[in-house]
Length: 354
Image 1: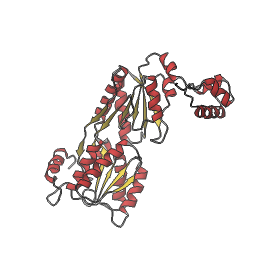
Image 2: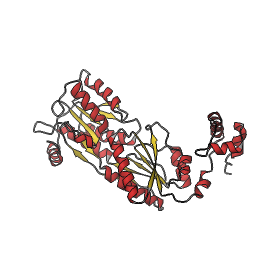
Image 3: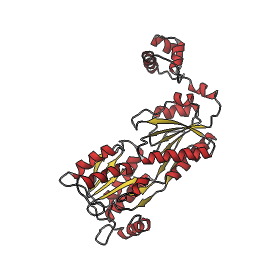
């Protein structure tokens, strides 16, 4: 026999409040004392109570508003992605409701909040999707598309760059440049983008019999990445190449290498990023694996609108490319990688700011 779901009355009795107080606690904008809200949440968790959001959602009409949850707008890539998504949705007659997260460990918007704001779908940018939110959105038929993250959640879709191939391309390029002591500075532990870039990078190095790279988490943060770079470059045997999981961290590493250690990028040290933000083309120029942000946004908008119309969610990958600039060496005749000439020609075809 199916287990009966706990009722709002049972939550009210356990918390020692009225039914209306419980209802207000699950209504966006309603006035509830913090202590009362905490008692209700504790009682609901103990009983396994979940508000009947499906019934509430069925009564609403289409709003032509898409929720966008995003984090780290100080990262130029995320800011550009938000702009491209907004413009693409605007061109199709949709408005947006913005939900700002502090990072991967910050709770994503709850489904009650999404329903209260009457969004037709959610686009989550550069943040993961909790199992609770995935389950709740699926239960009420709210489409969810992740951008720059992967998901295996049923009923959701994802649009990412080719992160594994990007990491593998960077590894082949650095091997062809003659590097042997490499390092990888990743994002937050568990983030699919960082994990996939790292996996592609380390797989190629292992297959080539190269030394296992130094590994550290930069948490997608320039300050943290700078601290990691100081420790790496100040070691007795510092790396001669550093691959960062995004340009935001790579720019910080480049500053530390040049200003604190007097290293010359492109000669005795190579620094490579990921994304190809506009800032990457400034100064000495950052070698990076480019993600086509406009294409990511267009595919994400197409996916979310298709899901609103009833299509199933898909996991889509948008190809990128290596952009070689002054922060790295280039392959030469003294290198020992088996695919040296192939990578050399690829790099020459795509080289910018010689």
